[in-house]
Image 1 (tube, rainbow, N blue to C red):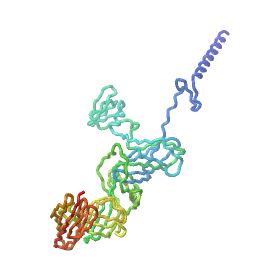
Image 2 (cartoon, rainbow, N blue to C red):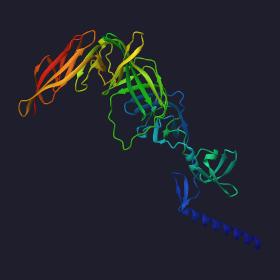
Image 3 (cartoon, rainbow, N blue to C red):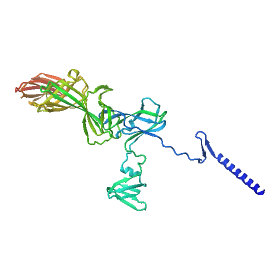
Image 4 (spheres, rainbow, N blue to C red):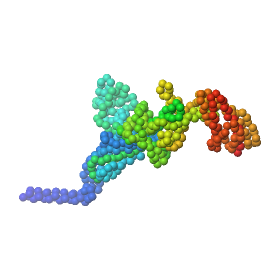
Length: 493
């Protein structure tokens, strides 16, 4: 009886003490009704469950829709649309196959088509690309396998490395110093977190509903440029020509754009100054030519935009030629000019034609190099000269310097100087032209002056072109020398 009573008293005491302890613990805790978690005043009763990794999705390049606009001076704008399976809630979207010379601050992501709302929480540009040294750096103090050229395999902890050696601690505690020139292969367990194999754009997004979504990414990139080249085939008479224009598009951006819609912008846009240049390396170039197709030209802001009718693939480190225009039967004039300030010994030959619809053109011609050819008696094309034209609007004259006139000679000399007063003087010149061709030609003699001037005497009528230029139109018959003599009076300020 006494034993049972003692047991009952002991049990009651234990229950009482436990209750007191539970009450004390409860009194010293805080319950968060919002999260459903209970905390000691010094910490959490139960540690939080480990966070589940956030889901991510990566679009493949299959089925992508790419458009590239190429500007002058190392600039391109890429619009890349791809399909993603976006889960409901928060997830990551990973966008690969982007230009390595991308300007990350210009990236813009927008949903295309229908679907639930996708809110962008933040975006990253990850370009810490995997390399041998970066992998080794991540595996310092971790186990690696090293195979040497003599087929030995060493397994141990990587203690250190430099460009010439690896320091390995083997399981028994011994340390080996390996020459990297003798290392055939290094094995690691996995690619360390944070290292990637290609530049990648990453977005953390929150979607109201899951499903397939079309997302379009646009960004600016360096390493892109384009320039125009023209080939003119002259008729022997010099009264007509055939003109073919090409656009050479250079892509050194670090990415390939498959089957892209291509636009070219002619004109120089204003760019905000940058603290550092955007460098890029020029690798070996490939030159490819696409078939000539008439491009669509239209005004865009204060520039001119050329849109190719067919899609094209712009491979990285490639120069691709695409057709801009092609016209035949363009009316032309062959002109002979002599400007002693440019070349005192030779008469120049120029080709001129109008950039208008009546001549078979009538579209703005981008700045570029124009090369002139003419057929020889055997039908082969031979180069007769080249020049560079500036941006030429429609309905303007295109002037192309071809070269020196071999059979038209020129000689210029000063024949007299008179000081009329302290601020007025007169100078006389003679230009002798001799035509050794079989046919007559007209030579335009171009002269220049400074200050206030007047032509007081001339053997050939002169025409004032502007405040500093005047011209003489001289007809030169075969083997009949012609002299242009004039006296100019100049008044100094």
